[in-house]
Image 1: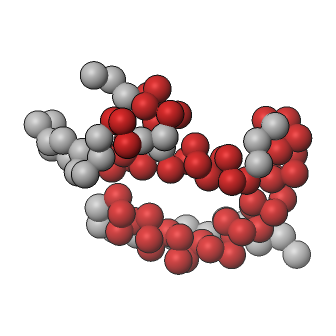
Image 2: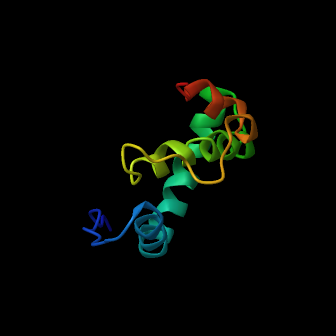
Length: 91
């Protein structure tokens, strides 16, 4: 039986919202990964571990949304980021 995507109410900073969304949508996220991963691996030629490693690199960009304009990323030096994230950094 088809179940439409639910509206999930979350609030807080990016980390809090991510944690709330992850907890409330864990089952749907798992099913979505299970459904799309085989096609993604075949087309992008990346394993799930490789996709996860690339995704880790976006954390700094996502976190920076919550920082004031003069703010700096906390505890993340460009050289400590995965290469995929370094490529997205603007000096």
